[in-house]
Image (cartoon, rainbow, N blue to C red; front, side, top):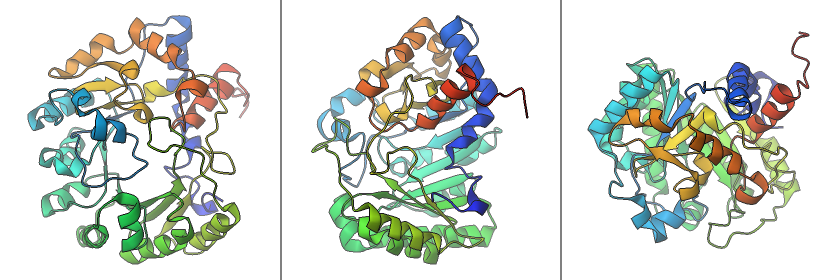
Length: 371
């Protein structure tokens, strides 16, 4: 069970992609039928800085942060004034939401702290992904403007945190989550606060313990999912063999913790039953729903393939309107068409969306003319 019956209409349920059906059709018409109309993405990820205090061994940008920093370019830290102009453009263009996220840790860029409120004031929705090491009243105040905020904790105790994240910051992170949940209660903010745990061998027996901790801290959501450790660009990449019976027992205990105010999501549908990578779609079709703007001032096709030159769409800096010079271009088409999921991709964040386009838009497998 990934979610309870009362929580199935949630952000983690990829079936929400069916609400993008009209968007899907326009993507297909543009990609396969030569239509000139490619609508703006639903969401933009903004990665403001290429720095991090932690050293998670599964990090998808570790190869660049550790070994190829020169490929981050001259910027490495998006200027605050530029990020404001970027949000202005995205709001006017018609993008619905922005996620302040990490090809690094976004809270290390103080200029990014104010972006959620800046975006909301312009009619967008915002979210923030952080490791929780940094917190301050100004950042907490802006987090209250978000639709959701995710704390990537990945551990239930200090020792496990130190082993898997390479730094002794667990107590600091827990203190900051507690501060934010108390701030939320005091201000009556509707923001959803999530404690997330990527399942790795070192924490697989402590999933329920982490869930209990999240509940005690007063967050609204606990999210656990497998790590993708089969990527070729991760040091020591390999298939991990988990004790699946033990993990399912941990999951079941987590779901017993759920209340009206605390929701548990054990999300596994993007992996096979043994938590290994699967591809049940043939083509990369859903990437125009979202792209990432990184600290090098460029946009990249997919948040799973950050900083990889073959998936670089084009520049966004210094003029955000430069996006319009390549969005929907023939080059954009060719980059998408060049993607072979089986050869290029490990876990796919948009896997179910790709499958929905194939099964529902291209094949009409749900017979949509008949309610």
